[in-house]
Structure formats: structure tokens, C-alpha cells
Image (cartoon, rainbow, N blue to C red; front, side, top):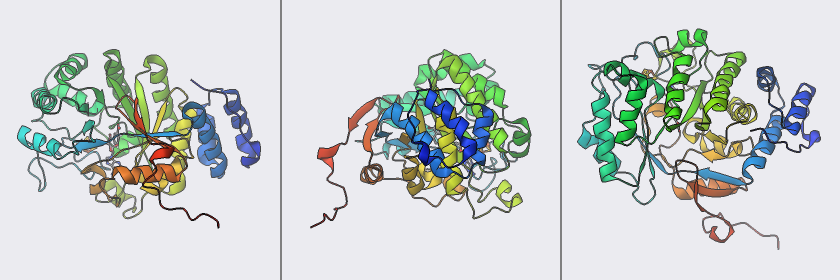
Length: 393
Ligand code: V47
Ligand code: SF4
């Protein structure tokens, strides 16, 4: 829920943001038009100040991260030709297509850092040969072999696909997956809900309402989830705000969302990037920071706003800690989806590197579990990895 905060009004220079700052100070909910004003404004520092103040009121100086391990079991996808932003999917007979056997999934899982990894993040394509039995066997096998590891798996789009090929209701599909070991769901597949944008970038994908409905069903069964928005392609600011408004409405209804993660569109090796002549140019730092800050300010009923350093670079993620972000996507091992689309960032980050980023922003790092419960904090006495600071003589 919105929290009243005290702002330093000298730090906001754009007069069009003053009425909005009044609302933030009173802890009043922002409108979609307010969100558009934030995106339109050039006062990036004023926006950061407001989002940072709201974030501090909720989380103080603490910044969390989780050590997770990505597994992408299949890149075969029936929507290969129509999700024009996707560089990852393949048709079954196309070069580079793969579907892991169970043994390959377990072998991949076994390469995780066994002392740190607490979560498997499992997503893939809409593969006609990967139905309910494929995933229930996978989750059962993973839980048997790695009982302490949380399974965050399958986007709303994949859940709807499994339900369709197995001719089951969404509810029964979710129950079967939960019983096999699925703990929470990631937020992918949302893209931008606006029907016009969807028709352009993801024509055959389930609609925004259907995405929301899968999450509603999951929340009703006690399966919590994340949500996302893929920004930086053909969408307008109004499209972004309509999308965020649908997420906020569902959160009002169920309270089932754990975190919001804006995803920066990467234009390499996909048809949309070529059509837009954007190959080699990703989103800008200002837009990345604004998407995170607007998430924090508009989604007043969300506790956690996560920056995904693989998509926006570790340095932008670090700066985003002053723009409303309280969580960093953790130590990721062998991420495929964005690297196929041109992300130049490393594929994993060590614990020391994450601590250094967070401490460099003068925040207190804390490792969390998948439900955002703090497992350990790394505070003052444990600063062995800080770069040495030259003290004034
Ligand atoms: O749905 C695909 C996006 C998503 C591109 O819940 C692209 O914790 C940028 O769901 N450029 C899948 N993005 C990833 C995802 C995710 C990631 C991190 C954390 C969480 C979480 C979830 O990746 C897809 C799509 O929106 N994506 N192609 C691209 N070219
Ligand atoms: Fe398939 Fe997902 Fe890629 Fe669309 S974004 S083609 S659904 S893997």
C-alpha cells in the first residue's frame, strides 16, 4: 500500500511533476496520466528522488539478491514465427533446436553452485512435445535430487500451452505442476498487454487478459508469481501505463505478486530489431531507470521492484538502487534468452561482485530466499571485499 514520504522539493525541478510529488508525499495512489507525465519528463533526478524515497520508506537501505540458476529446457516453440522480438526460439527441425532429456536437465542442474543456489528458474518455448508429463517428471526429479532448491518455473504462456495440449483446465494444470514441485512462477510472457502492440510483436501469444487470468488462478491456489513488461520497442507511454494498471489491479485483488521486473528489449538477431533498424542499439540508460522508477511509484501495492542486470548492465542496475529498486537479479548461470538477443553482459556474477555493486551504492546487501525472506545480511563487519579506500592523511 502507498506510504507517505517526505521529499526534498528542491530536488524536483520539473513543475509538471509537482502535483505528482504532492500525491507521493501524501501517500496517494498515482493515476495512469501521472505515469505518462513521469515518462515524458526530463527531470530524471527528480523522478529518482521520488522513487528512491518511496523505496527507502519500504526497505530502508537493504538491497536483496538471490542466487539462482537458469535452466531453459527447450527452445522449440510454436510461436517462433510470430513473436518477432524473440531470438531464442526455433522450429523443431531448425538448426540449433533442442529439447533436453530429463538426464540433461538434471546434469544442467548439477552444474549449479551447490553451496549458493537456492532457486532454479526454468522457462522455455511452447514445445508440442513438452506437455504436463514432461514438466511433472522434471520437477519431481529435481526435487528428489535437490530437495532444498526452490522451483520457479513456467510463464503464464507456457502454463496455458500445457493446459491446451493436455486438454486440461488451467486450474488442474497448475495443481498438477504444484503437486510435482513447482513453487512459484516467473513473470515472463507479459510483453505489453495492449492489443495493438501485441498484434505487432506477439500476434499469436495469449492476450493480456489471459495472462492476468493465469496469474489469478495461480494466486488462488497459493502459487505466487512475478510479473514483467517488455519495453523499448513499439509501445507508447500510454501502453506502458495501461499494462502497469492491469498488474496493479490484479495485485489489489489477490496480493499474489512478489515482484515486478521491467525487461529491456534487446534487438539483435530478431525480426523486430531488423524491422525497426535497431540492431546493435538497446534501450537507453534513462529509459531503463525510468521504467524501474515508474514501477516503484505506480505499483504502490508491490513490495519488490527488481532490476535484471543482464538486461540493463550491472552499472545501470547499481544506479537503479537510487531509483526505487530494492532487489537485483542474482547470480545467474548460463542465461540464454537475452544473450541470443544481443546482451553483452556476462552470463553470471559472483557473490563478491554483487556485494561490491550493492555496497558501492552505499546500501546493505542481503541474501534472500524466493519468497523474499532475508537469509543473511552482509553488513559492516563483513566488508572484506571492499576496494581499499584511501583515507585523507
Ligand atoms: O517473456 C524475450 C523476454 C521473457 C527478448 O520472474 C526478451 O524473476 C528482451 O520471464 N529482449 C522471459 N527480452 C524472461 C523472464 C524473466 C526474466 C528475469 C526474471 C524473471 C522473474 C523472469 O524474456 C520473455 C520476454 O518478455 N524476452 N526476448 C528480447 N529480445
Ligand atoms: Fe516462444 Fe516465448 Fe520466444 Fe514467443 S517469446 S517465440 S513464446 S519462446
